[in-house]
Length: 377
Image (cartoon, rainbow, N blue to C red; front, side, top):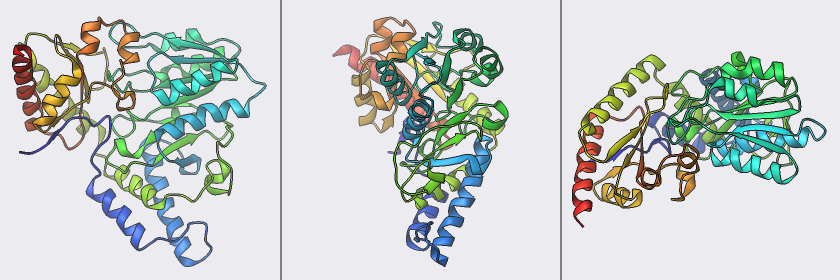
C-alpha cells in the first residue's frame, strides 16, 4: 500500500534535486568554504548560488541572507539577537498568542528579563488583522514578531500590511516575520515589505532538515548568538553546512509558480471538504483568507492521538497540530477559544507539491473508517 503523507507542515520529503545536490557537494565539493584553495572556492561558489536562489524565493538580496541550522535558530537569532544589540532600546514587545514555540519561548525568556510582552489573541476563526498589530504598538515598542502563516490553522497574518503603521507608532521597532510556513508556498517579499528580519526553513519546501535562513535588513542590528570565526559575516559563526545550504538552494529553484501551486492546493482542499461534508462529527476550522495548504478539522468524540495511530497503521499520516508540541494541548487552539472537545479531537492536514487526489481520498476514506470503528469500541 502506498503512503499518503499529509503532514507537510511538520516536514516534507526531500526532493531528488536537493538530495542529489547534497550528495554531490558532500562527495565532490567537500572543501571548507573559508579555505583559500580551489576546493574551498568551489564550496563557496555553491553557497553563492544557493544564496541567490533562496533570496529570490523570499524577495531578499542575497548578501543580506544568513544561513542557520533551521527556522528555530533563525527566529531565536532575530529575537534574542535584537535584545542583546538594543539593551537601551524599547522594552515592549508585540507578538501573538499563537506563534511557533521558537518565537513564543524567546519572548517568554525576554519577559522574565523585564520586557513587557503584548500577545495578540486571534479571533474565533484564528485570524489576526493588521490593525490589531498596529494598535498594540507603543512609542516604547522595540520588537514586533509575528508569523506570516499559522502552522496549525493556516491563518494568514498580514504582517506586511502592518509595517507602515508600526513605523509610524513605533519608529524604533524591529519588525520580524516568521515565514517558515509561508516561504515557497505563497509570495514573500521581505525587502519590499520593509521588515527588518524574516526567517525561513529548507525542510518545509522539500529541502533537508538542519538548514534555515535569516534575512536581515541592512539597517537592522542583531548580535550573534554564538561566537567564533567570521562565517556568515560574523553573525552565525561556525563552518557552514555547505551540502545542506546547496540543497536548500536546489529546493528553492524547484518551487513551482505560486498561481499553479495555489490552484492545486485549492482543488485538493475542496476535495477533502467535499469528501467529509456529510460526515457527522467532523467540524472544519477554516480561517477567513487562510492558506489552502493547511486544513484544520476536529473529529468530535475521538481523541486526536487515537485517530493518528489508526490512520498511521493504514499508512495515512497527518498530525494533531505543531510537531514541536509533542502531543501537548495546543496553545493555538486554546487561544482561539475552541471548545475542549474540538481541541482534544483536532487534526491538521497539510499539503505539499507531491500530494495527489488519491492522497486526499485515502485520508477521507480512512478517517470515516476510524470514526466508525473507534466509536464502536
